[in-house]
Amino acid sequence: MLDIAEDLHRWVEQGRDFAVATVVAVSGSGPRQPGAALAVDGEGTAIGSVSGGCVEGAVYDLCQQALEDGESVVEQFGYSDEDAFAVGLTCGGVIDILVTPVRTDSPARPVFEAALAAGASGDAAAFARIIEGPAELRGRALLVHPDGSYEGSLGGHPDLDHTAAGEAAAMLDSGRTGTLTLGADGSCALAEDGTLSGQLLTLLVESSVPAPRMIVFGAIDFASALVRVGKFLGYHVTVCDARPIFATRTRFPEADDIVIEWPHTYLERTEVDGRTVLCVLTHDAKFDVPLLQLALTLPVAYVGAMGSRRTHEDRNTRLREVGVTDLQLTRLHSPIGLDLGARTPEETALSIASEIIAARRGGTGVSLTGAHTPIHHDGGDVSPPPSAMTQAVPPARS
Image 1 (cartoon, one colour):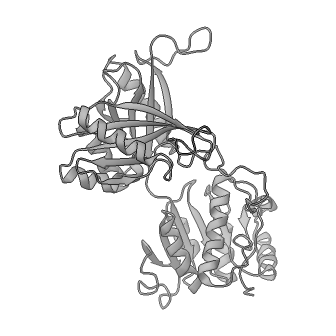
Image 2: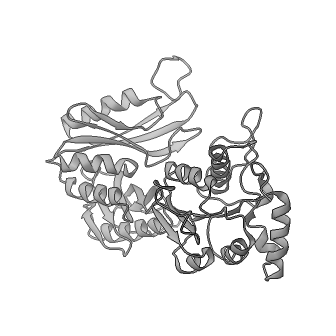
């Protein structure tokens, strides 16, 4: 649901009633992941998607029904090979969808409003909802903040909210969205057979975290295209260059931040994390070497550097001379990007973005045609070694 928080927050501010359908579980080749949502308001307006089109019509009808009767429901959709026109997923997957009415008279409306406000503003928060359990508790919600404090209530046992908030905060810490099973009494204790004892509740926990950062070093023409692609992919994009004549708002109107500073000095003082990607396009040893010397020691998701193969070898030699180890160099994607035969700045930006996605999701970068690799990779963010990638750059720039 938080994937469409900005639009839903506008609906809340306008006082609209709506129902939201959220993917809570996926098996097989599902087109959308848990947390993806479709919402329908009282006028029949729809936003979002839960299946890329396969079951949208049926889910739309469920949302309208929920708006009428005020009841939450969980429905499962899967592939039907008996009737090509039956409601189902032609990709062969199975998805479970929670449909929840969010009317102005809904008891959980205030916590939904708070969750949507957090999601729309990019604040970190976890939104937990009961999807399986006693009928009177289904649809109850809890909004959990990074410090463990929470709003709303799941009802039931007084310890339930405290336990759920702790578990949801842990999921928020890693930016995960998924389901969580707890005892209805708030206990996480296992029975002797290894299962949770007593009555069980299943919760969907959606994590809203600030946009990941993309820092582009080097205010060149390729950087302008990469900024646009980075924004399209949902990154908070910063352009950094020591040369004020190039690092201007006119040249980079879509960048979130433009920093005029030596790259390594800026990297020393700015905040990065395990989702941050660093793209070094400066193509100048006096900038590249001190910058990469620092970047390769940081716990970031991706470090890539532009240049021809000759530039790459010369840069590696210079990096070794200043103490960068061979193990650290294995983290460097250079020459930057996947081998798409890219020529233009836009094609090059797509090449770089493709490699970033492959590194994040554990993809191989090979064509899916004729391949036997999975289309969707499970397990969240993964960073395979650079040797697993096919790396190249557009025209050589030495």
